[in-house]
Length: 458
Length: 48
Ligand code: SF4
Ligand code: SF4
Image (cartoon, rainbow over all chains, first blue to last red; front, top):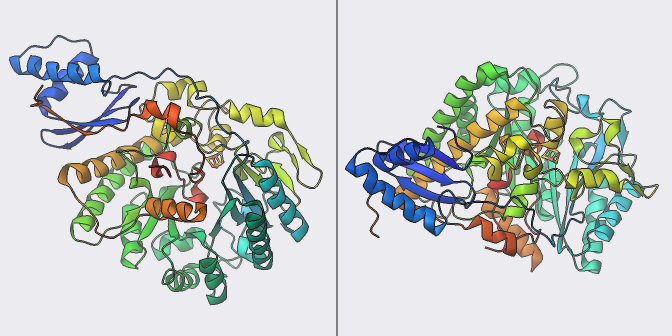
């Protein structure tokens, strides 16, 4: 049954993982205790001796606060809401012509443009000047294709590193690229400067080339694959990002294929609004199930995969504040266009209703920031009743605006996909805990990122 | 009490982090596909 404070995931016969949503506690229930719990949740009477015995154990957990625990629904106070992270759209132009691009081919339905040094430096100053109380800030190079403005990236990294030293505040860099221009020289720079990189590669060649092609319609697979294979020889700080649309609902095959090619850090993303419909959910669910089985098999065989979305933390993970407010778009996180326009998020750049100001004009709409600050799982009725709330954090603001019914009404399809993914992740992590599986010495992107941040903070 | 039907695997005490958390040092979590949709659950707390 579906309950807002309890999630049950079947791990095996007589082994059920029970997540207590509000405390994050994880229990392993046998079938009898699961039955007793379900009866309690459905307000039915317990019948057998065994059920009553199990009920006593359940009551113990309730008493100690690790089952049916409560959340007062109040956002923690004294939290720093200052800006922490910017997305620098250094190029509103692209060398590919992917039809599914949310940025309409890289220019966000506006003029093609490259960011200038002046705008880029001012944006970095803005970040450092307004991130009071923070010990680390983040800059993400994005586009279009950011490498079309590589000279600027080089310049800004040098600039940011200098400001970081002067202000005694760490800076963490990242970038998303389509890989076309990722040559030896650029790769070396990215590795040297610790720039965590998201490599776009959809999956099998025919899947990739169907959507990711050059302006002359030639697929980009061969070009980017060879660049990526070379790049990943020099770093573990990357994630190869696959994509699924209605063409590859069997995306577990794409993950397996990319793994076979040697990519150890992978993720697989649905393109929301791209022909995937609610009718596809059963097939997608099956794909996640197949992927979880493969994931565990690889782990047991000593060939582990870091699959980004299975890295959920059962024993700890982020604090509740982070889980309530998520990405922080509009206050902690801002996107900046080549002309210096400020938006709450890179995904909202085409929407003038969300223009927040301009870096060069020193304008910033605090009221709009406030709207985003006051949008979180406690303000969304649907999320308040959803078991996934502390893992999902209320969905993506931009998806909710574009495909749902506004900031406080999450998009139905995104919710269903999110829950399928989380269920698979709970299954995988539950199995790992119960069977005591480990991947000796192998680090997932969660650990790599944490170590990197700790290093930067030293 | 000896538990026969239930084993507790993890007790992260999430609610307590209302007091202890919020340092803001962990990576920003963006759910956008082009940035690998890092949901908050995919992260580690820097302090732990
Ligand atoms: S956005 Fe959807 S899946 Fe996420 S917490 Fe809200 S209701 Fe649940
Ligand atoms: S609104 Fe969505 S795309 Fe934008 S920063 Fe938040 S999670 Fe990411």
